[in-house]
Image (cartoon, rainbow, N blue to C red; front, top):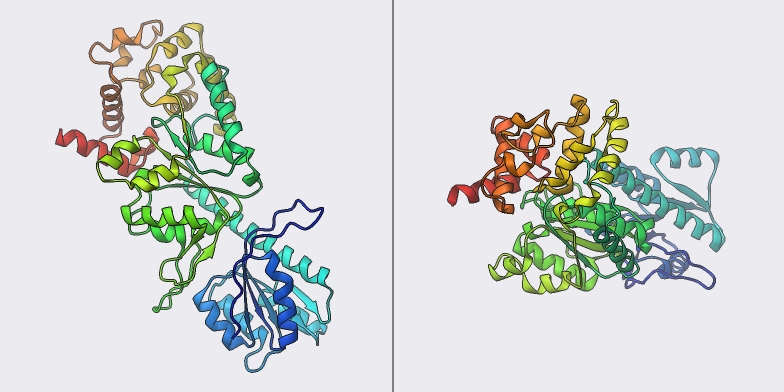
Length: 468
């Protein structure tokens, strides 16, 4: 079994601007000359290249590492390349396979395609043919990842807060900051209250950056149990019990952006692993001794002051400073209320077709009412209000606060009149959350999506109030 070459950064040849993604490639051929030719040709263009002289040697490597692409000779001593390919597909291994052979006929080609080969090259082949097959194989692997991510997004979809909509000085300043930061590949930390649109800001950073051609992979660290978050992020190698290997979100985000929302919820042990990834650009799947190079931009977000979390011993100081290379704070909606009319129009125009309902009219008095409200749930709360209003056919201002129904029909009544008592943010947030909980009979599973937070965060809030 040949020693694997050291990882190589993607090559940009003279006159080329195309970025080759980092990729782990396995070459399987029993002829030393052909094997060396394949390795030397692909090494500058792949993240890692391993080589094996037989199917049996290849099986050992396949159990130890994950590969994006396998260049596999059909005629091998012992088990044939076709047999190995069929076994890989039976095991659920999704890696792309390019078969090569010196003795191909129509029956062999048909069998190769049926077995799951992505391409078939006839020896002797030109370098350009090999590179085209290599490039197309990586493109198929990328499309598979994007398809998996699309399915994951659809399964977990909760509509995001508003896009970066608004003409206020604050929003224009935020847009300019995102534009400026997008040009560099530094780690970015987005801070701000819940509902201010941190995921939309992360998406904007991704779209504007050189990583925009790759996938945007969001993950809510609070929504994944602590026992699963490691494999969710880093993947899992094949275990002794026969469990199939699985790729983590870092692999699916290859060449793009990984957005880590509510990063303060990461367990301390995993914070150390994330710090190492930020420093080395390599990950180690759970249960594996092999590191995988990754080309991923990290954007993190939190609605809690990380400095206080560091002081309390719940967040690593070194990771905090590593994430804080660039910090962008998203403003609460109460700081740019002049954008509310534009946001209302945006939500009506985007949500009404999606819901299949008619648009609603919002009067001047109703807009004045919305601008006088403090919006503890920020833009997400406004979006949820417009969605509920579209469903019932009129602006449902009574949903804003418990007890506000007595002012329905008189939207000119100031919220402060309807809400005598404390108006600090924490009190308003608590009142709002409790009102939503009461409206769904205390069902936290139903209340969490309405509030735009994870159930785990909601339970933590309730526990804090109970302790208080």
